[in-house]
View 1 (cartoon, helix red, strand yellow):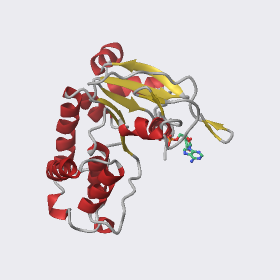
View 2 (view 1 turned 45 degrees about the horizontal axis):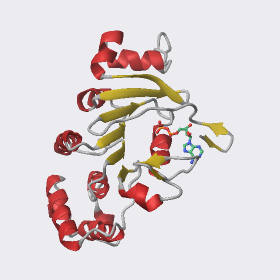
View 3 (view 1 turned 135 degrees about the horizontal axis):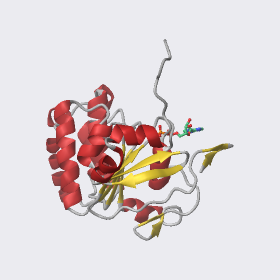
Length: 234
Ligand code: ADP
């Protein structure tokens, strides 16, 4: 995939099973967000199948199986958090009673109950990210694509999200998340891939990578060809 003349991804191939949390690691600019935008249908390069449905030809069927948290979450500013979720539920044709129950549950789990009736434009970054997460989880997707899901969350929010992801995996959801936080990746993901030079240069379980490289930071530095500061003064 290229933006104009700028080639960002080449020969990128990997698979994720239901029930697996896969962490996409990579330096800034490696192409993590681009990968997630491609998989969610925000960018359309060639053929992408989600659950057997072509994202370009059958977008509604494909996207009904997908939950996506973008890097910059866009909310409907003039709606309250609850209305935002209700609107998305109606776009997804969710039955009213089922969607109301689901919305109540998500607001509670993500600790948004106290601000659910406030306008989205008053939300802090963390609240915005949480409502974005609630939006991605609303329709109980089979595949979850999360761009830097831990960014902007406070410690309780991070803790909740870790628990939520583990639950989703237990329920058979395939989770692909990007992060540049190695410690989070190690803790949360069953498998990791390091994206560099347009493709995955290393994949494995956190245990595999530690065994081969000592620690994840070292593996990351080695495979992204990050140089030490050395004697450079600044
Ligand atoms: P990451 O999420 O790993 O930080 P991105 O996918 O955001 O990386 O970016 C990958 C590369 O693509 C970077 O070099 C970035 O500058 C470039 N890029 C991203 N979005 C655009 C765009 N809309 N137009 C042109 N170049 C872009």
